Image 1 (cartoon, rainbow over the protein chains, first blue to last red):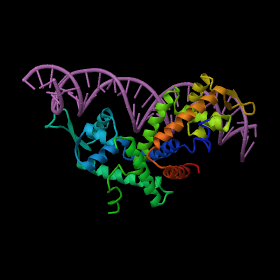
Image 2 (tube, rainbow over the protein chains, first blue to last red):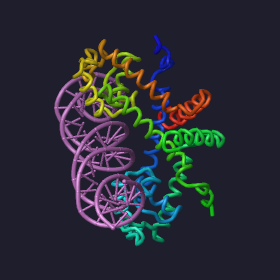
Image 3 (cartoon, rainbow over the protein chains, first blue to last red):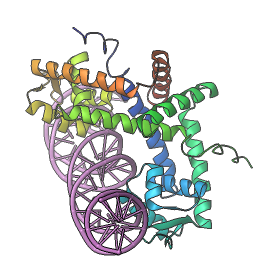
Image 4 (cartoon, chains in turn purple, red, green, cyan):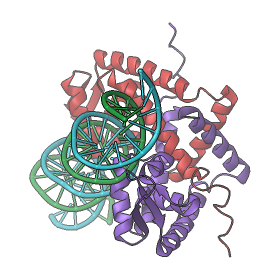
Length: 150
Length: 150
DNA sequence: CAGTAATCGTTGGTGCGACCAACGATTAGG
DNA sequence: CCTAATCGTTGGTCGCACCAACGATTACTG
């Protein structure tokens, strides 16, 4: 009785979560292709960009800000450090922590990847006007705010 | 020179692809939790819902309509058939194909999962007005249309 | 101040979704 | 007719998200 109409229009293809996942899937694919040229992946970019922007941070902080699990941060930072894009140093003020900082090469790479990301955004949002892009960004931001720690 | 402004406002958190992926991630998590109660996953629902809605189809067709790889369709249909939710029968008109049909139990499960999905949509879009929900759906639909086979 | 709780980095593992290559069987098209 | 395309299937790979547990360290609290 009470659930006759909900999905009546035309199932699946109009379900918001479906649309969200599919478009995100396309976005991820485009991003991956872009990142492949740098031989890095999404996690690396998130960390590098956050570091380049907000300055040095501990791994746990990075994880929280990037939405990456602590354990995954370890591996990604290992990769970045192995390439000389970041430096991992023990925090003298708290010996539990490591302080991660970008190197000059890391900042360069962050800038280059940023350009790649910008290009992908343009491809992704190609069919939308700039007003619509802002609308989309606004709506998604509100959803995100609501669904995690404000 | 030309790439000074693009990501200047506040990196990452305003990048559409980031917003898209994060919200989709939340949606996926909510959906997974919902599906867990049915002991099924996303692939199963997509296939079941499509079958229940559009009627019997070949595995390849299902894959195309659901955005699932042929090889993954095999495994998912195995699961569904093993539970008696669908039936896999050779197509007499084309011996390469299998015709997949929902059983009565499958239709029931599809309906129940549909209710779960509807509930998740409400949770997901809770902070948006119905006008905004339509906006979001419209924008995502256009992006999706543009980015795959029209 | 002592003892418990919390945090940090790390290791190792899980699950899901997306994708790719190759195969034999079958069908369609030139 | 024969080559190309399609289908189902097997058996992988990869990226992202997540969880449990550990020793080491720090913070909290009684």
